[in-house]
Length: 69
Image (tube, rainbow, N blue to C red; front, top):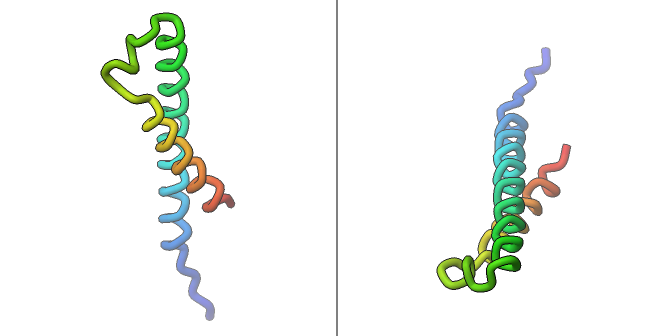
């Protein structure tokens, strides 16, 4: 009789789904902030650097690709 443990696979699936959500939110937020800053120069970049959202999107996108099923 062979036992199958899928706990590790469930954790990978959880992190992949979480990274997918983080990627989508951070990428769309970065695009929206970029468009607002393009229309009204300095409105966003005076208080916040949107590059940080792009870095978060890049890291979470890499996690999605690494845990690809």
